[in-house]
Length: 582
Image (tube, rainbow, N blue to C red; front, side):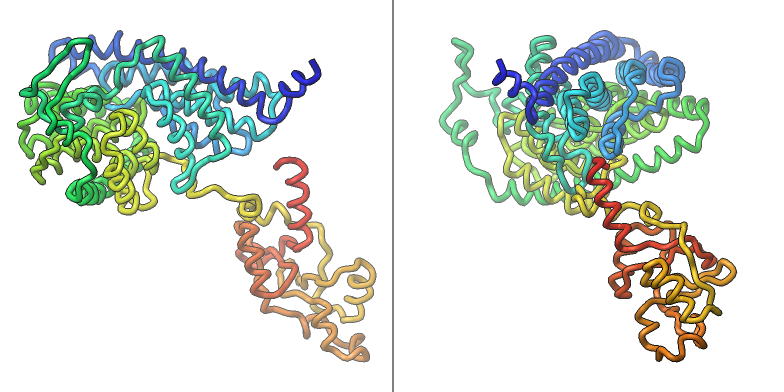
């Protein structure tokens, strides 16, 4: 019994067990969310007359806004960005009372045809659930376990909505940073994702989220229509030359095409990130009613225009219908390019009008369309290759999550085309640069000392200090400060204005017999830098190193003296933060 109690309370055991429970809870939430969105609303919207389909997104945006304002008590439309923001907070917080409002607002936005993805509310639901579980069982957990369960919950949300457990893990680990991952949450995220996936497919079924990725003809670039098929026992038999094509190695042309597609996807991802930032800024400066009216009118016009061009309102919904249309053969380059522009416009308008949803699937849609366009330009004989490469490259560039994008392709296609997908994703990352559609992402993880260096100088500033006037003698400085208070350096201040520093170094340069007659103002050191309150500790330590000093005066922009920053106080601050877990 004692042995069991030891195992149950040691190390990571509580957080691992809670990760499994979190995964199951998240799967139940996402199953209900997807059923309401896809089967109750979106399928019915697509079966309505065109005028009703065109007006449906405006209705969904209005309902989403009302739900956020009243049920959510003023909650924002942000979803996956909230996970990233909370992850970087010292005390992560996602109010549980906002969860029903955001999930229902997501149902309204996407279910009525808004061009956003289900993964945004799913990530929010998962991360919020993880935090709620950590709060409920906080006496079993360490301080760092809260952030781990937050990440595990987000991983479970992605794993469920995409039916892709490995993608869920990698996305949750990659999302908080542009060029790094959160390695400490790996094992809990694996458990949460696996549990969520198993629970979810038993509730909803294993059908693919993006059907064309699991279609052998489109995925492998083989023409199976004329192949002899034997369907006894559910098996499909292919010609020998088809099997050779299926299992052949990666061709040089594939890699070159992947490089070209990576460049284009990187530029597209960078443009998408800029548009997302712009529309979010526009939304903040525009009042609610004009934003809803303009957004609803634009989405209606886009739906009608798409129906006229493609005989289907392909701007409606997350974009799965658009992907299925574009991968079909015999579409002209002009129509494919038009669909690319219309889908971007629909996504940006849905986001700017206050819609609740994610950008993962919309980015994937843009990648598939771009890939199909490039594939036709290059006249490839493997038609399924380029849409898949485009998905990996565009998604990875937009979200700064290349590993997740490639894993999503690998899980969705059974491993086909992974090597060129890696090439395309890597090139798109280089071209896209630091841009991302996700707010609050940090560049890289900061280590223990680096986190301390980002603190402001005010965290170690001492304001209750004695200064010396410039007309005081060196003898007064020695007896009152050096001997009386054991101070090696003192700020020289006159009328509140900082003049410089006086220290034992300057004192030693004056003959002892002249101390009684030499004022401090004659020997003070005025060339030392003065820190500003806006500086970080990194700035101050760098200035100390350059000046070979262990103390800096802190002043405002008018050179008014505020206090002193000592090297010893910075070291003491680090000890205090380490002991308190700050």
